[in-house]
Every structure is written in structure tokens, then in C-alpha cells.
Amino acid sequence: MRRVKTASNRLFTNCTVIDGRGGEPIADAHVLVSGDSIRRVAIGPFNGAASGAEVWDLQGGFLLPGFCSTHVHLGDVWPLPELVDEPAAQRAIRAGSNAMDALRCGITSMRSLGEDRFIDVAWREAFEKGISIGPTIVASGNPLIAPGGHAKFMSRNLEVKGPGALRRAVEYQIERGVDCIKLVTTAGEALDEGQSFGQLQFTSEEVRAVVDTAHAAGKFVCTHTGTTEGVLQAVDAGVDCIEHGYVMNQTAVDALVANGVFLTPTLTVTHNEAYFEKVGMPEAQRERFRRLRDRHAESFRRAYRSGVQIVCGADLNPVGYCTLSEIEWMVRLGMTTSDALVAATDTSARTNGIARERGTIEVGKKADLVVLNGNPLDDIGHIWNAELVVKSGRPVGMDRSESKADLWDVLLSCGQTGIEAGAK
Ligand SMILES: [Zn+2]
Image (cartoon, rainbow, N blue to C red; front, top):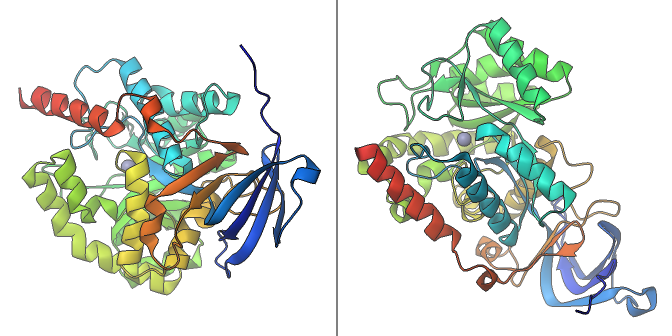
């Protein structure tokens, strides 16, 4: 068998660069990648052959930084995220397939905000070692919830009470290799029958215990927080990123701005009816999401108008489809296409703690790139058609026919099994 040596220098030429920082696109540009990093971004032709680079003519395409999600659960299956008696290995395999499928959709980095048995840490390591080409994963391990709290039926959620126990739980997660901590501070949404919406789950002392322990170890904290009261408690305790923020008044939004706290709005959760339909979400569950929808949209618009650092994460699976859906929903609800692209690249990389290396097209950064054949600034719909994805300098195999299983089919068949098991 003949072994083909892979090029270490690649020149991407004849393209428009949208660098992820929100400035004017750079037309007629080229980007030189050496090994895993960007070495040159400039206008006009460049003699790549003379530099020994493999030349990729992008034929007038648009070159962007890879998209970055701030909120995924790689092993979950909707509409019933918990499968009864599922072997851990099966969940682990599905999680990896989900991550690799997302990479082919252009999502080159993601933050896992709740996974069972440190499956997210394991895939992070596997991709970093190069066992497969996968996205950069920032892992949180198990979410910490109050006893009987939000989504208590899911085995990935750890029920903890009291500042001392919470401190120990954070330390345990860190020992197991997580990059950040996920804490659920409010409940009462679609998964929580019988709990009133927005109910605070922890005392302020408890939230502070989590934040202080995490920060002391150099880790950041993201909280599932649905309401104004929860946002004010979390911001006061020093939380780094708020997830959801379904219902927030101006006071809550002002607190986010004043403290530089990021917000992942997860608009897909309440807005994407086509998704609900596709996964066969039960009507009662859809209705609970719908009831939040208008207030959620209003909170998002208020946050955007006020200058909150908004980031992009959809919470649902498959990660590839749902992350692109989230970018589209941000635009549908009033964000400019330019701001949505910055939110889904640079700002998301910053909240994920990886912006030193990723999130923009700049000299010195890792080459995480997406090529689109139409201008997403004119029509955000072009994000759905990634022609090419480059991960740390290496082009990713885009041919889905390599694998016989379609991820949607895998997820939908799991969902069906879950519904049957749940109905028994
Ligand atoms: Zn979530």
C-alpha cells in the first residue's frame, strides 16, 4: 500500500474572508496555513507553489472561522433525553458520532454542558490525541442540580445540597478533568412537571460556594437560569455565563452587561417547531415551550439591544443541525447577520475559554475554518452549506456516504425506543 504524505502547508486562495471579528469582509483574499496554524491572511494572489503549500482554490467562496457552540449535550436524545437502562457504551458512541457529524456541519468547537460518566472528557481527550478528527470540546461533566430539581430523572444530573457538599462535588468534577462547571439554579420548564417556573434551586450561599471553588481552581461556571430572580442571584455570585435566560427584565439584562457575563439564549429550545415535529415531541411538551416563546424572544431582544455578550448554543441534538438553527434564529429575532456570525465564532470562543487559539481568522490562531459557497452576510441560510471544513489545519472528510448510518436515523430510533420504554 502506498502511503500519501499529508501536506503540512496549505494555501486557501480566491476567497472572501469573514474573519469572525465583525469588520468588513476581505475580498480576493488568501489564507496560508502551516501545520495547524494560520500564518498569513492577505489580499491578492500569492505564490503558494513556491512556498511548497498545497493550493486549495476556493473559487470565490466565503472563508469563515469554524462555528462554536456553547451548549451541547452530546449523548442526549430528544424528546426523551434519558433512555431507560441504556448501556454507557452506547451513549458514548452516540456522543462521539454527534460531535463528528457537527464538525462536518462546520461546528469546530463546542462546550458540553452536561454529560454522563465524563463521556465529554473522554471524547475531548480522544480528539486531542488525534484518534479521530473531531471538534475541540470544552467539558463540564455532570451538571449539579438540587435534590428533586430540574430534569432530576436524568442520570447525568447530580443531586447535591449544601455549600460543603457542593464544594466537594465541584472538586470531584475537576479531579475528573472538566474545564468548567454547570449548575442548575432555576427549574420549572418543559421537563419539570409540578414545579413552578423559575423556582430558585439553591441559596445564594450555595451558588457562591460553587463559583468560589471553581474559580479558585481556574475553572469557570455556567448556570442554567431561566428568570430575572435567578439571573440576579447568579450574577451576584460571580457566575461567568447564563444559559437560557428565558424571562429577563431590564434589571437582569443590565446586571449581565455591568458584570461582563455572557448569555447563551438557546432560542431553538422554544422556537424551532420544525424540529419539534421532526423528533416527534409530544404535544404537551411543545405546549410548555410555546408558553415561554414570546417572553423568551423579548428577553433575547432586550439583551441584544442592551449590549449583552450573546453566544451561540442550542441545547438540542443533533448538535450540527441545532447549532446552525440557533444562528438562524438569532437573525430571525433581530440580530444582524454580522453580529450573529461574531456571536457564533469569536464571542462563543471567548466564553468557552479557547479564544487565545480559536474563534477568528487571525495570524497565529489554529486553522479552524469553514468554506461556504454563498455570502452569509447577505443570507444567513448559506451557513447550511459547508463546502469544506478545516480542523486545526486538516481538511475534514465531508463525504457522509463513508458511513452508512445517518445520525438523524440513529437519534430518532433511540427516541422511539425511549418513548416506548417511558410509556410502559
Ligand atoms: Zn442544557
